[in-house]
Image (tube, rainbow, N blue to C red; front, side, top):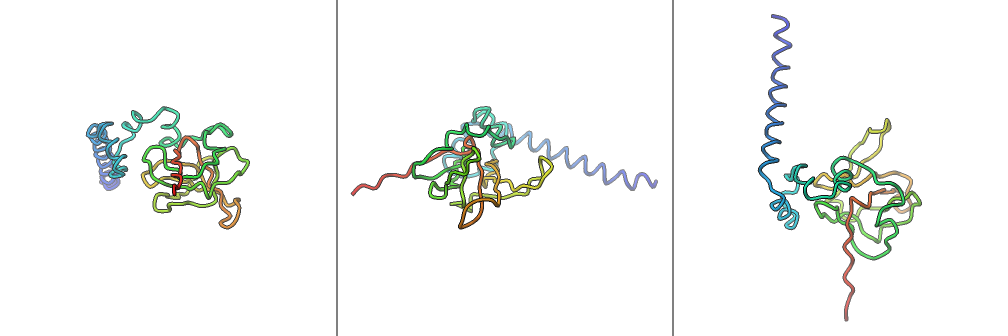
Length: 177
């Protein structure tokens, strides 16, 4: 009887996990890539897009960075040396996150920014991978963008070290008179 007291909560946990897995599987089947594209264009319901659909929408290397928390090789990203004025958006959900006015050359091999331009679209999360504590930078819809470190320039002293594959760039529109 004593073992039953410990077994019942354990069975409840397994039943709950099984139900969550089934719900996730059903959600995966309920959204199409076309529906996800509509959500992205409208900027709505972005967190409901399942990984299986993101896998269909993104090239494999971009999916690895954004949804599997990968890292591109240093000095290979297309935005590393970009000097144009504009806004950087997350590559999948298209959320504006960083501004070219906050970008600087850190020498690390990844695009670096000293501040976030759209804090409502950025989430910081403790990351204990690689056996050390770092701070992961995510978009508000959950995409992995990179990490932030406390070795950047003033005025913030921060270095948002991001993957080019996690970003897209929207140039500023030239002012006409």
